[in-house]
Length: 164
Image (cartoon, rainbow, N blue to C red; front, side, top):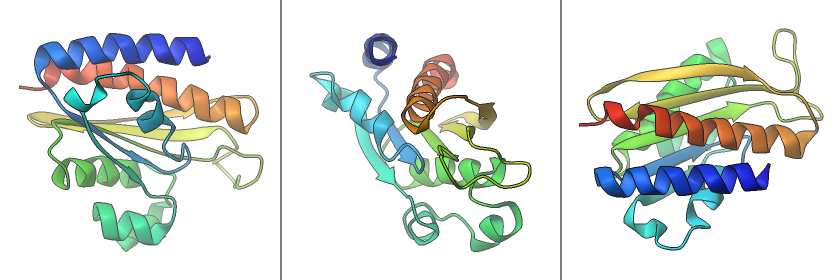
């Protein structure tokens, strides 16, 4: 999986450099894995702007402007929350494209309707609508987090053409 992630980072880095686009991440269950993957590549400062690791509710509220009502009504693992996280990352950075992730990597934390492996990812960018997707990954905690990281990177690459 690590090789797939690195290959996707290289592909994304080339596309971001050509487009002159900076990115930012807002991560919860991945704990900065997307940012780590992006910055593992030399020269990433040309297209990687910043990361928000917002594991607690308070950090989501304070750093990204997620509304407490959103978390109370929908939970932090929800379309509504990751969309607000992605928008917050866009508004609180100089990036033109952001990705946000929240989910249940396990082994605990599951609830009715949200089993382990449930991951929400949202992408936001200048001049594009926020796009979000729910994934259901299988495996252990590490595997789920790696799959979420790869999906986040693939989504960034897919959405890059929607940026000015």
